[in-house]
Length: 230
Image (cartoon, rainbow, N blue to C red; front, side, top):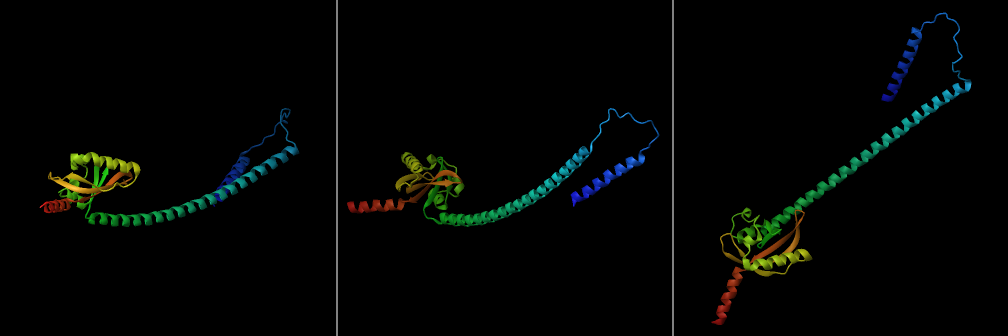
């Protein structure tokens, strides 16, 4: 409709200019003009002008038709793209919801575990569960998160723990349980049995260490040994 309206306006404007020019022209008697240098157009030239004009009009019509078809195709592609985007968005929304549910279940499981969980990245603690907070005699996780390994591990155990974490990171295999000693926030020594496994923590490589308090077991073993000696 816009193109049709434009064509009508342009046609009316051209016709108005033509007839306005004709009405404004004045002719007065004069001697015959000197047409020596004038260019005459033959009948073939007139036909050629007409043919070229028709060709230009036909080309314009074809171009307009192709342009309309291209516009329709672009619109179809845009609609298809929008449909795919909506489908993908729906899939991602469902996946995020499922991931959120999985993370919530994992969080609850980690918080309910009786064993302590430490997540270590570049020898710095980035996460602990409530059992780890209690194991180190802390009041809240923020007192532990951010500390270096050397701040919570007894010097006698630090080298072996570092070696186990390094081996686990390089091999991608969980380390076997071993006994170590931690240093609680109150300065007391905490005997533990721990194992570590490499994980991804927020997109970066990290180590998850699972530690179990073995102080009661150690005391029981010592009591048994004393009883056997007696």
